[in-house]
Length: 426
Image (cartoon, rainbow, N blue to C red; front, side, top):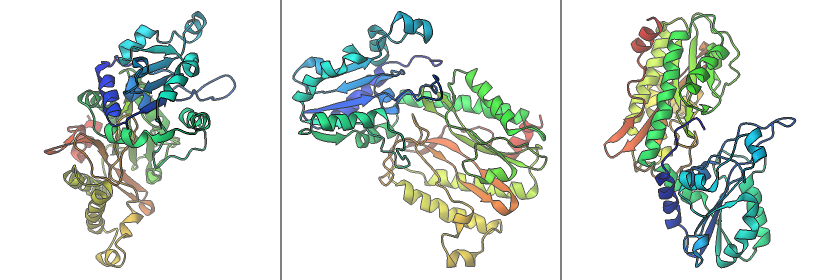
């Protein structure tokens, strides 16, 4: 891995938080992600399952964590199974973690080889009344492709039909939403690298460059700063492409007079930055572009005052949309009569949410309809998209909820029009 090793104390702490919320007489099982085939004998770059990483820090395939905190047999209270390394694996792909390395990374002392799982764990399941399984319960996810935890759940139900099956996801969402200080530092590093990429672009973008050239500048800056690369497929949309919310083709030439919408983030140690900005390709906002940009910026500033612990995301977003509607009237996109006749008229120009949780996943786990908690990290990203004018503007910062309001983790990043124009023309 490119990132610096994380102190295992974080993962020890995370496991305890999960174990403390388990029902008595319960065992929990967490699988690593599958290696995903690409074509022929090639695989996509491995990406660890976020919950397993959160609980162990182990960043390799073929890994299983077992938690059974009140097991009568001390051996079963914490166990981890990892891929057995070999001379051949070391030669072809690089050596995997040895047991002493696994302990150093995770703090789990009972380490076994992956192929020993069933012969080792069967008796542990017989001592438990409940089995916690770890399914992907992100409400945006559709499981067209099976995955390791889903297959394991089906296998467990077949092997132990008399056990009670319980869900790990609600517990993990609850504890992962509130970030530990160590996690905040990792997020800050991902965000710092994201900023370096943006500042590089401000000096690079000019009429005639291609969107994919801009993408190349970003990945260069990210990797040279110990990032694995992009936190998600970057959106680099010039002109009308900025009105496509998830535009990732990045294959157009940037023209004089275009606005360029940028939405990207660096990943560091599996934690993610997420930034959106809109800049003029020629270094100077037109009057209309500036009017729309400042309207979005005004909404973002207002949203940061509304984003508070104790408020649910839907209620907060509704408040933001009220303010957005006022701004859409001010810039002559809607009339007060249109809004009176249809309070949802703003959706023509602002059709996405204002905030999402951020952490090990870009759209991090959360309880969408419950009050937000102190220590949560979220994005704040209003936007206005005017298809008929070919203008799309989104401005996104990452913030943390504190007792004194939000702390903007991107405070001081170029945002104001004069800052952007000055840097682009320096």
